[in-house]
Every structure is written in C-alpha cells, then in structure tokens.
Amino acid sequence: MNSKESIRSLILAQRNALSESEVASRSGVIANMIKEHPFFINAKMVALYYPLGKEVDLWKLVETNKHLALPKVIGDELHFIEVTSKTLLIKSSFGIMEPVAGSYVDHDIDLLLVPTVALDNEYYRIGFGKGYYDRFLAKIRPPHVMAVIYDFQLIDDSLHQHYDVPLDGYFIG
Image (tube, rainbow, N blue to C red; front, side, top):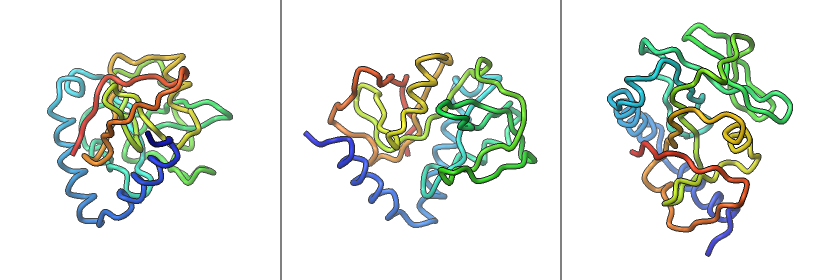
C-alpha cells in the first residue's frame, strides 16, 4: 500500500508530463462530457475551479448559459463566489486564480466539480492535503459532487481517513 504523499507525488509527476495539446484535448473531451450529463443539464448553479498547472481545464464551461462559481479560500474555509467570463480573478497565496469579489453561493450549488489529484474506487479523493474541500463538504453537501480526472488519476488503493468525504462519482478523460 502506498501513502497519500507517494501517490500524490507519482500522479502529479504523470500529470505534469502531459503536453499542453494533450491537456487541451483531454480537457475538451471532459468538458463536453460534463455539458451533456444530466447533472449539468439540470443544474442552475455549477461550482468548478480554475485549473492549476495541468489540471483538467473546465474554463470553456463559462461559455454555457449556466450560473458558475469559483472557490475562494478565506482563512481555513473554502467558499464559492458566482463568476462570469468578465469576473476579475487574482492569484491567491496558493497560486490559484480566485474571484476578487462577488456573491457567495455556497448553499446554491447544484453540481460541484472538484479538482482531484487521485481518486479511489470508493470515490474518496486525494487533493493537495489541505482539507479545504473535505471541510466544505462536511458542512454543505451539494446534490451532486463529482471529481474531474484524467484516466491515470483513478487508483486502486483506498487511503481515506475518518475526516475524508466521498464524492458521488467522476468525469474522466
């Protein structure tokens, strides 16, 4: 069995080895898959993320007619702020693009698309180890919470802890 740290290191190395064209191609496939899924079609508010490095890029979903939100870290908590293609974003201390201002929509999210380093077969995710999404999901559980991953990010090892929160499934490409 591997530790979360070793899995995180291995998967991130694989992800960082992807070419820009491969990221764009796979991201396009996954974004189209999401747009055609009933969870997305029926959602009024979709929370996604701005890609960090070579994460799956879902930013083309901003072109849909959905209300969208991006995460913003405030203290030790994750909150979601409604955004449009014109929303001003700034780089946070973690290097992640976040909205400067806007309406908080934590309780309005119908579909939450979660960035994920690795996902096990029970839908427990390994993120970057700070616990922001786990703490958010322990307080507020949107109707549908889905990981967004490349195929190599799906793992057999189950390493979840008592504080980890399982997701509902995943979009993969």
